[in-house]
Image (cartoon, rainbow, N blue to C red):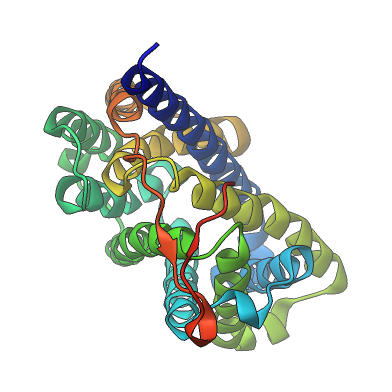
Length: 308
């Protein structure tokens, strides 16, 4: 068998693995969000997001234990920026979720990945982007009006953060081996989240809710962000952005199962469109086979990225 055929099959397997990781990530994110909504009455959206981020940062430090010598100065700076964007993404999403249904919030937030799919590096076929955009419109049903303005603003801010998160995650994932980059960015996000939410946390937190938030932090964001890190090593950012079109559909399904939020005919049709876009993005979205060089700290020779 020719090397070309082997390369094509390897890239297709990578795309399939990236698809599975991305879907698992989206499912755990939305399940964590659905399980978090009932806590809003007690903790509030800001304290809930801050505690989840704080615990996630602690968990990543304990589980991965990054070392300073594994990073250049530029790598640490990129991880810090990624952490700030991650904090914004989760805080704004939780605030939007306190005003809007889970499916609608996720549909609006998906505009961030959709922008990456349209304009990002390695942009994929426009047909999948168009299908994804059509699905999101059907899911959000803007013709009905009545969307909460503040919730919409929060969701769009989360969308902007998500676009930056996708681009930065791939950059950090290519430069730093394993999950070490995430083990730096998540503590930064956790510190920012706790500082921003500190007044709400000090007012509402109790020991039982503290341990509940630890469990929710492990479910989301620790597990899904780790899966996204690995998925973005196998998919282009544009294919990943299009693949994220599945998230509003997953959110709507879990909103129905967990929160009793029932979708209408138009959102049901939207699910079909976003599933189609996700499948198409998977078949065309494998990253080219490259071996990026990683600059070692202290002027050492570049090294090849380790396999995941």
